[in-house]
Image (cartoon, rainbow, N blue to C red; front, side, top):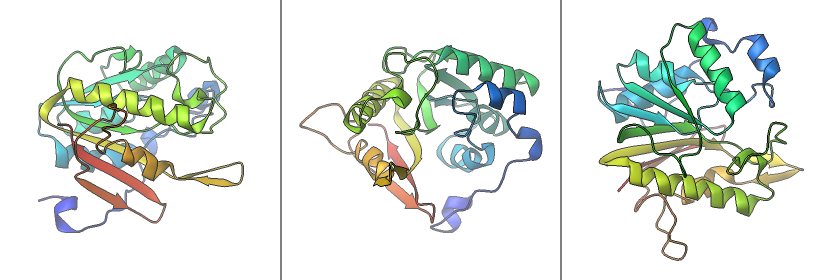
Length: 226
């Protein structure tokens, strides 16, 4: 029994100060590291939705926060990052913590992970972040409009389904955003990409199994990737 079995809500704890993003890496990032995730946010999901020795993938690696969470729980972590400069920042950060990790440069829509995945766990890229890095094909931060962003997100999740084990689980962490004074319901729209989509044929799964909402509001879309 773990945190998710005991109650219907959960609040993440702050990371240990040792895992804070170093100032030099933050300064070198196009977004100044403001989208860096927490390891303690990831660990309960690793424990609940995978078993020791299984394969955990973060297709939006960023600064590599999922890796230590997976490693501390005895899982094998795989990371992908579409931006080469950010991939190098992740490698540098992980090396500083003596973590052995390969960060594959590319998008899951075009590049397959090295092993079938048991758990996909990620913080998604956010729309409207004013990306200042290289604008590469498939870079969701650089989407011209919200419709293009959602199309790109569905393409990643569609590719994910093909690369997961039959009983694999996908977890996407996302909250609604304020862009130009307008609330963008990104949490709910990304969650919808896990639902059946006969019209476009590009959604990631056949059923949204569970969802949580906290005061953020933050949505955790969790699904069997079948």
